[in-house]
Length: 422
Image (tube, rainbow, N blue to C red; front, side, top):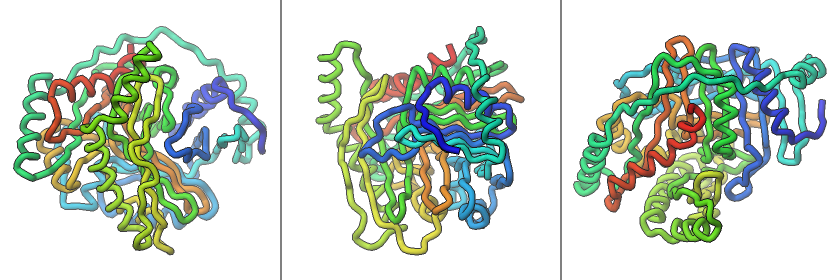
């Protein structure tokens, strides 16, 4: 069934309707401008499970290939990759505490799908399409009084500053030349309305890769501005973000901040380092000589921040399995640093929390073997059974980094989640 809609209210009703299922996934562009105009799907809702695969930490990548081969010619498949799938690519481990407890990956074939494309054309794929539309239309979006969430930092500011200086010493010694260092904010004994919180998060921070994911008692509420990797026919695209500045309510000041970001030598250097890493990652899956930088240092504006986004493309090797193309680039360089393996070893050394789905990826495989996955950042993770909630924020540490300013950048990135929970 097809019709035309671009209603924000309808999207919110669809999220609330989908939340009645044990498993659902919402992907929302939030009517944002996409870097390099790579925008095909405005909104996707997947609810209910016809078939699924859950990561168990052993051969997950190969098992997912088999699952995709079984289904993707006929049905879209939705799901996520956790950051810790890195341990099945390289000789790495993750020994930190994990109080959210998402499986290493989860993908499912949904019973019901709603897609809205960039032209506001809607498609409903379900044996009960008419009934579903009627049920969604009667959903009432209530903004009930919320519990105050008391957030704590897992790492104090003093320890953070000390760790940044230690990481800079690794850079001086030549171990790495950039490292993405993240810290956790958390709260315990939290009674949360996930749908209501997600709606507030999207209102506070509308981004092109917003997402809501429910897996039984666990939730991801995501306001990501970043695409990890996309396949469109025979083309691969990756769009790393490095470079962030807070927006101003004053137009002239806001333009000045935007220009400062555009020409910041530090931000350009960080961005270029990750672009080089992404070029190398895409080359593993691509026709020789086809990797190119489509846009370098693009500046894109969102409600709270300006971001520096670059776009790298390539032509995928004929016959390469789509899961293999993702594996070859995983995890995304913007969330690790470079060289990637050493950066991930140092991340394990200096961070105190298991990242879980944070700095993993969420998205879909289409029936024609195309796919599109975001970077899971600016995201709240919540375990309803244990009542534990967290989010992580980080920044790229380089030789030129000022520890105080890096800490301020972390707090800036935390603002949208803090407001959604306040």
